[in-house]
Image (cartoon, helix red, strand yellow):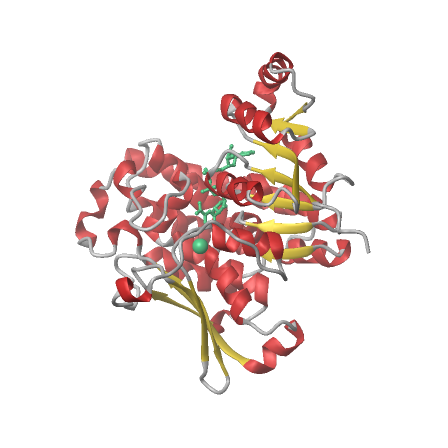
Length: 396
Ligand code: NAD
Ligand code: MG
């Protein structure tokens, strides 16, 4: 029998934290993987360096930097073809010479390429949780219609996926609930009364993970966990009441499944995103990830505590949004993207992120989305409303 051909991978968001970790794992297995496309929003130099190293057939960059990228590729004498903008991303995500798409763009900007990959039946490695939070049932319908294979990369969802039985048909009958662990971020013990003065630098200093700035702020508010509750609901199909969150500051237990008989199956490991990335890349097989092994003896204690609603009010918006009319999770995500942007730009107080999210959620009830265009319209409207709130609070 001929050896199986290499998996041809497109890494969307290649210059980011997940993109870099993905390429680290891929580079350990040149016999298994071939990088055929790489993308970045603005970082021409970083993308060129990756093109030199991985020699992909295509490189995609934001439209404003396309000429710069093309010139750089020529100068380096690389055969890589430059593509620009959202059209380039969706073209790569659906290209017949791509088997696997790593969706590692941050935010709703990744939705269109994810849907394209789903419709084209790709193996879709989903780090870009916002795409599923916005896309919801429309996203899942695209996966079914295209015959795609959706695999979670978020560490909690990879943990749940690893702790669930192989056959999804058995989940509803066997599983009582799933429990997502959360580190609690940098402000787990901070006095809630002082959250108004938090700086972007403080919010981005995560104790256990080095990540992009948006997800770092989300971890500090625990909106990241709110998005993950919604992500889990869509990925695994459990009711919102069957999804719990517990704070576990060591980030060693990555999440767990509680079965009907009260047996709990958890997945553990050092906090290193290369583990869930390697699992997504190789599933159902296992490959070396480069992560350090877990040393239980030096580890000492694993602790757990409940999330404090005064410190982390945003977390609880997840269940509210899931009980509200379909499309509300897209409203929540859009509001949060606008609020986090404004906070990082110094235009919004840290504790006002929640005020923007809650206010936007309460003021805007979307009609049921049935297509990408519907979703993008909800996203646009929610952004406009959240933007007004940001300006109102800034004047306030
Ligand atoms: P990052 O900011 O480090 O990287 C984002 C990547 O996407 C970059 O390559 C950037 O150029 C590209 N990008 C950003 N905006 C874009 C746009 N509008 N159009 C096209 N490309 C764009 O982010 P990250 O930490 O790697 O996170 C990526 C995704 O993975 C997020 O959805 C995040 O929630 C999720 N995630 C990250 C981690 C982590 O450890 N970093 C863990 C779990 C899930
Ligand atoms: Mg996570």
